Length: 99
Image (tube, rainbow, N blue to C red):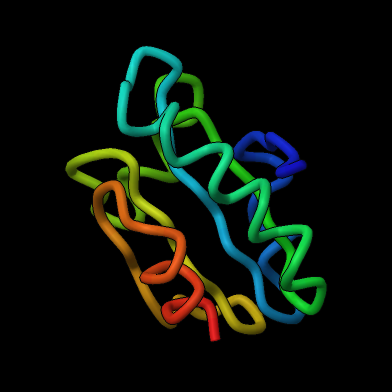
């Protein structure tokens, strides 16, 4: 299960290792479809940390990374953004992006 975090926790969780952060909103249909896919992937790829953050409650994170549409998945390595995946993607496409 992907843990939901807030802005205060965000900077801390991306500091070390590989981290995937799903930016979503509760009213977003594609976000709801992406959530179970990420939950499943997070159980398979145990070397990567997975989190999600509600952009309605944490707009500063979305602003900082120029997130214009959701869902957007940000991938970090030791605090540095290494990839950004915008929109609903298949399980296979996401796994490729996370490697």
